[in-house]
Length: 326
Image (tube, rainbow, N blue to C red; front, top):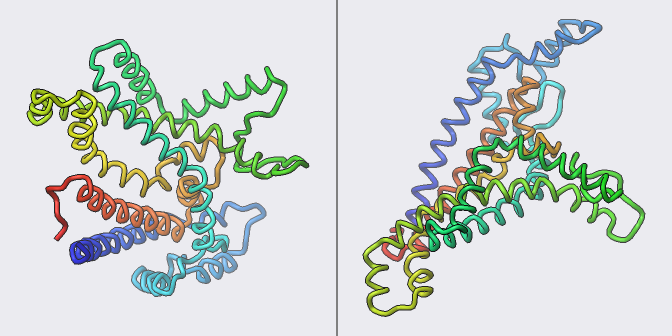
């Protein structure tokens, strides 16, 4: 198993290097950091602009190959460079990663768990009222853009705050005004996390329930499940031991990728609720013509996908006894 995972990691690492290098070439040739300074008022001396760009390896007057080698040498030393305004990219990634983790971990995991539970349950009640209700709600949520759901929850939270004359819900930023009482900071963070976490749970559970329902229906109609029922096995045991376990095998791959890539999968949620996470940073780097930032976010997302691929291999091997990682 270790040898197999080692080979997979080498393959993924090679693909990641190619993807990140191509991203750097695309960003370095298409983004124009000089424009950030040329639009300033009053105008900045062109020589000052050139010195600033040369300092951070962003000047298009330097040959592309030379700039790439300078960038690659820095990355090999753990230095991902700086933005055109002199902000360390590595520090931004490390800070925003934990912000995204605090926001996304609970929402992603609860969304997956609830989605699997609802999907499996509705599959056992196919075409009944409960199945149709859950299916209709799930399809409505899936067909609604994330930013619409986010704004609707903000409107509802504002209405509830006005109705109760309290600040029960806070939904702008990661923190706000902290009161003077025990655990005030913790309560403030929980208030700001509540709405975006709810949005992530709703979106994740809706999509996951549809996937799990279809997989569960395939398993319930399989020959081995019908044989287990014919032999007198209790319905609940046939469903849990045979149908659900088999249906969870492809779900394991999806869950592994969802958990590993959650850092970069909630851009709309972070933008709507103004959470300074990785997703929002990725958009900001493009807007601010930050070549090194764009490449660093791409590399971070690539590492997340790499981890997800390895986790999916391990989970499939755990869930399916027929699979052996040699």
